[in-house]
Image (cartoon, rainbow, N blue to C red; front, side, top):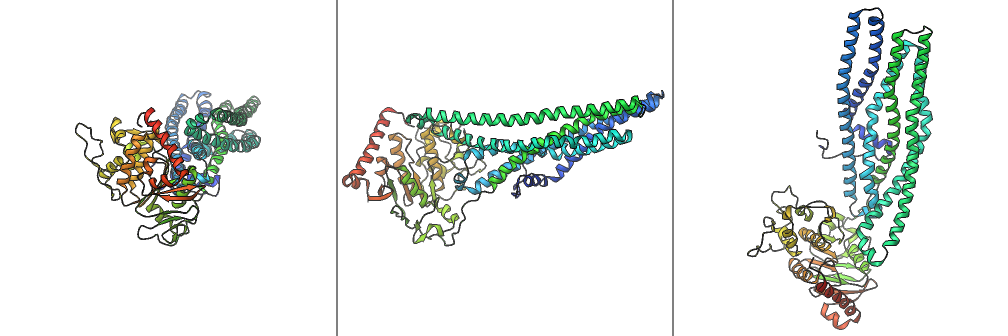
Amino acid sequence: MRIDAYEDPGAPDRRGGWRYLAWLVRRQWPRCLAGAVLASVWMVLLAATPYLMARAVDHGLEPGDLGALAGWTGAMVAVGGVNAWLGMMRHRTMTKVRMDANFRTVKVVVGHATRLGAALRGQVGTGEVVTIGVGDVQTISTSLTAVGPGVGAVVAYAAVGGLMLSVSPQLALVVLLGVPALGVLLGPLMGRLQGREAEYRERQSVLTARIGDLAGGLRVLNGLGGKGLVADAFRRDSGRLREQGYRVGAVTSWIQALGVGLPVLFLALVTWLGARQAAQGHISVGELVSVYGYVVALGWPVAFLIEMGHQLSRGVVAARRVVAFLGLEPAPDEGTRDAPAEPSVLYDPASGVRITPGRLTALVTAHPSDATGILDRLGRYTPSDATWGDIPLAEIPLTQVRARILVADPEADLFAGTLSAVIGVPDTDPRGAGNCATSHNAPAPAPAPGQQPTGADEAPHLTAAINAAAAEDIVRALPDGLKTQVAAQARDLSGGQRQRIRLARALLTDPEVLLAAEPTSALDAHTEATVADRLRAARQGRTTVLAATSPLLLDRADVVHHLVDGKVAATGTHRELLDSEPGYRALVARDAEDGEAAEEGEPAR
């Protein structure tokens, strides 16, 4: 069974939760129609059994006609066999419906998240996306039960009402009015459930985001002595979420209790009325038996109708959240001027930083946020007056900027997969990294005598990137080299290993302009020195900007800008600034002391 067989899930209807659910049905209407037909026939045949039983009693058992009795009994057996098959096919079809809706919604959400790109984090929290992917998608797919058993329940309910009409108009009237009465009683609870469920989902997404933040910054919080404070805040928030969950559970329990209790009372009333009419001689014994059977058969459609209302109430809430997410849009790209044809100067007027093409430039500041702000402006991730050549960056189409300028985020996501795929070479490409843009990096040297090959020798560009990031030891240490499966965010690697993997991924793209923030902050001094030498060689003739305070990196830079309060205070080489700028000397000397301590007290990472 291949559910996710389509390349494009289609354009979803974003006009509301109900319309989104209807869109999911329209996208697979033949399957939904088949589910509705199968469920309807299945439920109607459940009601056919008591009808056949009544005929067996009236026409076979009571007059003693064994032939008629055998015929009606055989019909019941045949109907039971057909219904068993229909039940199996109904369940199989509805499973496909749910899975299609699940995968289609996942594709729509992931596709939109990809289109938002860097604008995603600025508009919605990580917890919101996780909550949609984990909870709302499942709720939406489950709510599509309404198109199968839900439709079948309505059809079966009408069919049983028609059969009851042939027995007693009074009983038929009770049956036909019973379920609408149940809907009137349960309707307010369904509305309350939607409100409580929406509030619960909002709180859940906030708490999920906080969990992610804690997982990523727990070590830092512990070092600053803030772990207890944050733990207390998290405990309070989780307590509020638990209380909200209790309120959702209270409404749900009332719906489920009334959904079980009210139908029992309703069916008991029908049974009592049928027994009275049989005692008064208004209906035959066979008809009384059929009434009992109809009452039993009504249990399925009534239960499905109540369950349908419950699932639809929750599904609409989840669909509204998906629609709200799909309504997010990135900032409009109004660029109309082409980027410079040749490598050109990048200039940030806000800080005074001027990046000369083809050189390795370093930004040094006591406040890392100042440097990352400059990189974001030069990479056009935040609005600014930055220019490229003599052209404002804001006037250049974003696609052209992204094709030539890469901002290497030190916390960039690492997806699960093989190490080669994490770095950027798809496993499905039989040519290794041969499909990458032609690299200016020289191929990595062959393994030294006695050294095991890394497994990347078939992909020169990948090998060169790994070599420039000094990550060969990572590949050698893994059991299957580049084919080793790596967990999401590379949680099974150390912090320094993750940093080198991110650097290798950035170098593999070989951008014209590379902007990187603290690319070696998690490395020991020996590994950092290796990366500094190889990075300079790998980026020879290309524009590279590093935000760093490490003397090992700064000593390899062609130009160093010393920033004070976010503006250029001095420019020169590392050694020139050491001699002429006391503030610069104090800043990088402190970093050098930290590096020496790490080199003496920690193993290489």
